[in-house]
Length: 259
Image (cartoon, rainbow, N blue to C red; front, top):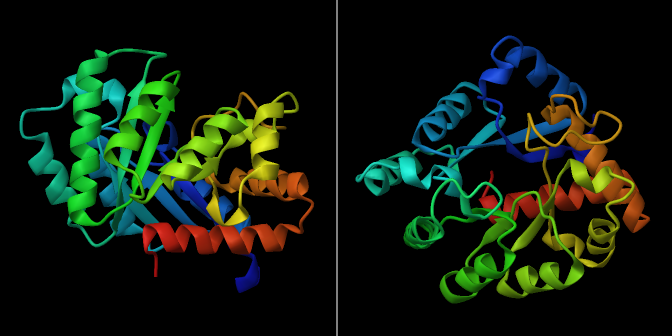
C-alpha cells in the first residue's frame, strides 16, 4: 500500500485479554489492511501501563493514558502522580480516555467530574491532547469542557450524537472520531455529522474489541476494520477513500504530535 493511503486507528484496546490468544495475528491483519498506526488507549492505571508496554514493543503503536469515568472510584490517592509518570514516556501522546458516563454510572457523578477536571488540568500542564469518553452525559460533558478545556486539543472518542452536539464540540475546538456505528444504516444522525463536519476535524477509530462495524457487527472488533469506517466516511462525503485517509492521517499527526 502506498504512502498516500495509510490508515490510522486512533482508539483501540488491543492490550485487552480478548486478544491474548491472537494479538500478533490481529496486528498483521491491520497492517495488511493498510493500518500503519494504532493508538492504544488506557482506561485505568493498569490498562494505561499495558498500553505503554504495547507501544514500547511495536513501533506503529502509540499510547494514551488515563482514568475513565467508570473507573474513577478505583483510582488510588496518588493516581495523579502515577499518571504523570506514565505520561512522561516518549510513546505516550495523550491523556484519556477521560470524561463522564451516566449509562453505567458506576462512580458517582461528582467523583467522575472531579477526576475529569483534574485530568484536563494535567493534560494542559503537559501540553497533551485529551481523549473524551461521553456516554449519556452530553450536557455535563459540554459544561465541563466549555469551562475547563476550551481550545485545549481534544478528541470526542466514538462520537455519538446529533449535529447540534457535534457543533458544540467543534466550537470548543475538539475533533470528532468515528467508530463502527457510523457504518450502521439507521445511524442517520451520525451520517449527517459525517457529511457536515469539517474533514480536517475528523478521525477514525475502532474501539476494538468493541463496536465492530457493518458487516461484522456483533463480532469482536479489531484495528483492521477501521478501513470499513474510513470507507463509510468517504462514501458519505462523496470523496475517494485515499483523500479521506490522507486527511485523517494528517489530522491525527496534528493533534497527537505524531512523527
